[in-house]
Image: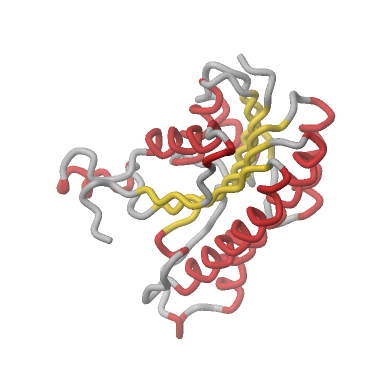
Length: 235
């Protein structure tokens, strides 16, 4: 087991849970942060190999984000990895999109990423090392019909990641943005996976392995942006 901490902000039953498991099994103390305590507890119970600590944290509330990272600094091994994986999306035609729904998507998917990235950077700068990873999507690169909410948030998050990388990489902190280009395998898309065939959807554990590899990269060859897609995906 390493004497290091990984924080995953935005854990759910798909990629979030896989990230918690992967870093836990790699020996990290993992703080699994979710907006609800019940969700965090459920994910934490699935971890194995290291310590998984559930914590309730709304990534859109500055005070809660700051407290999360203050808790890491006070009570846990040094923070080496911070992953922002929060997001929300509801497909709507632009004329039917309420202003509050658009703002909610941006606030969770982009503003939350800024708050988590800022808090992680403050702590990692004291240590002179660390990795900050952001989960993007196809919508990070192009806006599609019905995706105005998601595209706005993901475009913004990509910009946040680029700005952080240019500022923090020279100071020893690796910042990377991961574009998830395709559907992630889950119960919701079980029939789609069956219709398309094996490995036709992104497997959460395979994505999580890529995040771990990003963290382990030597700084002479850091990746800033990585796009992941199943072999059948058109692009």
